[in-house]
Length: 241
Length: 315
Image 1 (spheres, rainbow over the protein chains, first blue to last red):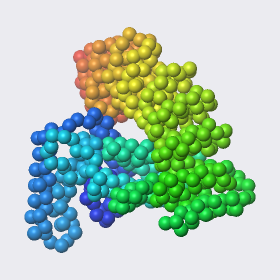
Image 2: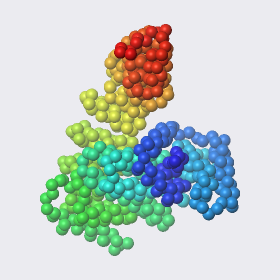
Image 3: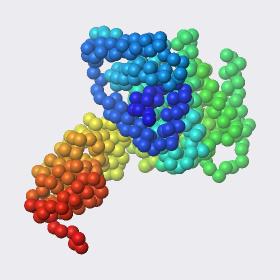
Image 4: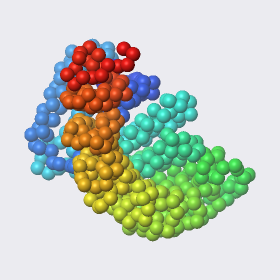
């Protein structure tokens, strides 16, 4: 059984280990009901993300802080008592991860620059940080790489799997475009939106699919290169694209 | 560093030698790149690690050189990532080109670039272009999130078809305010109703449904409420059904069918006061083919309902 929270973590590339990600990825490609649930979740997040930005009340921020601290503290206690079995470790870590996931979603919806960390109560809304990569930035990089992999898998997929996979990519892409917009990265948001018509053509079987896939792959790689260049730039202060 | 940029330039300029490939069955822009083109594309990717000052001259040479269309198209995408007036000017010039494949990619790249002045300049290309160009420009505005331009096109459309395409794009962009402004004009387009439904804008649909406009538009607005998958829409349809009769009531029922609101129809069935109404609602429930239908059918067969559901022939 895969919960909505796990699907959410899968989407945000946060808090799941490689095995869990692989398990959910496989399940998504095999179970239409699960893919449908993911779609519904994405639709809800889309609707939520479309809400006007409002300052987060200080009380709410404190509640997040307390939840995170409590979760972290639970995690510490669990760490001291846990056995080395992976399954056990997962169940003990879950409250912390769920809290972190909730914080990510809340931050994504309510803040211009979402981060995993809930900001400390403050009178002014947080602004984009330029330090360590945020959950969004890490997630975006993984999204670009995973989209490239998913596109590669299209050739060997059955028509049903292919349709589901493309729908999933479109949904993921839409949510990352929204996240990019909110993170103050309009350039990235535009590129992600530019993928949509090509993906829709692919889904509808319009045009030469190998040409569309090649174009998407190229643009995905360019964007990955751009993100890497920006990272390098922030480390060396050099001017890049 | 110097060696690297020289290598990239050499790879990209090499197009002059290998671009002389045999004629292919498909235009370059409509097929996957061949091995030689893949090499040039890898070199273009490498440009992303270079400064705009270094990358721009190489891209210009690629665009002016003998590379295939597919390589030049990808070069336009890379160009869209360079924030410089010269890069934008090249995109504008290419967007005016007679080469449809290059023009389309340039228009898309202008959308990706997102420069407001260049995006506004697309209006002239839109107005002068045919259906394909218009579609490409609308998509570029969608990519850029440039709602105002799409709204202006919808507002000034010369045909219902043109207006519908712009309205659909506004719906894709989630441009609720712009769509509502269009709805305030007389004779709301039917494309607008679909856009409201896509955006789950119940208030706008209800305003038209319950307004004094043309009956056929009101009916369609009511039916479109059925496309909105939430409780508020289901309640609205039940209310419209209860407060009206004739075609408006039928439209509400069709909306409920579309929304698969069998509980709503069952509630109406139970509250129905005439045999005729009960029969119509029972028929609708049967079409929905759910548990509620069975309940109603069971009740109709088991009891001699005060409303007098007629016996089913042959039973």
